[in-house]
Amino acid sequence: MNPQGTSGTNEYSASSFSWLGKGQFRTTILTLVALLAVFVIIFPFFWIVLCSFKDPEQFLSLGLKESLPNTFNINSYKLALERANLSVWMLNSLIVACATTLLSLLVSTPAAFALARIRFRKKLFVLVLLISYAIPSILIVVPLFVLLAALNLSNSYFGLILVHATLTIPFSTWVLQDFYHSIPPDLEEAAHMDGANLYQVLRYVILPLSIPGVLAAGVYSFILSWNDFLFALVIMNDAEMFTAPVGIHAYFTGRNIVESVWAQLMAATTIVSLPSVILFGFFQRFLMSGFLSGAVKG
Image (cartoon, rainbow, N blue to C red; front, side, top):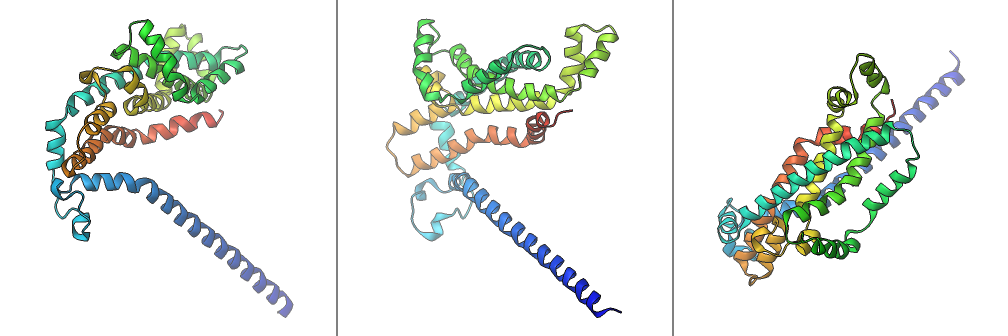
């Protein structure tokens, strides 16, 4: 056996293991960085939920034993539901968010299909959609309020739904347009050859295939409307018509901040955050497929 050949083989094997070690080290470092980033993001929410189960009378205690709840105390939740109109505000948010989602999908679904299939100079139109979505909300809140006041739509659910829809429709249309590009046009041509009209093609061919994209756009619209604070604060004036974020802000900032109020605030924040978390967790698979389907052209 050639000693030089053996030495070369050993050197090749050593270099291979060395490269593998570097790859594993790099993967470990990236994993640790990702875990640290996730911890930084999740920790405030985890702390809010944890503090909501503390005894309201010991909420601001600096003692190490009292910093974490020994038992899960739900008095904060009882106080938040009994002393504030939290259930009414959440119902208002649910009405506005569901109506916004429905209106957004009714407009963005056919608009996105038209952008994906009809041949015209649509680059400018798509650019306008992206720019309208990228404009900061603080720049348009006052003009929108003046417009709604002129139309007698201020302090009304319908006015707030229209404003939320103007924020969700551009992004939903953009997402669905990319998704429709991933659906082969041959399926539509085959349906037309079988005698189906445009409405039947949309209903029986396109919509069943576009469920992941529609769900992604719908969940996005619902969460954005549910969590909106700025527009709801400016447009709604009646306390009974407040949405959950505005109602919580108005109730707890107008009271003396004592231990029980802080505890109620943590409990109310947890309750209001649950629908978004549950919705996102339940439809996470559809969200990922809906957002990424348009990135792969068929």
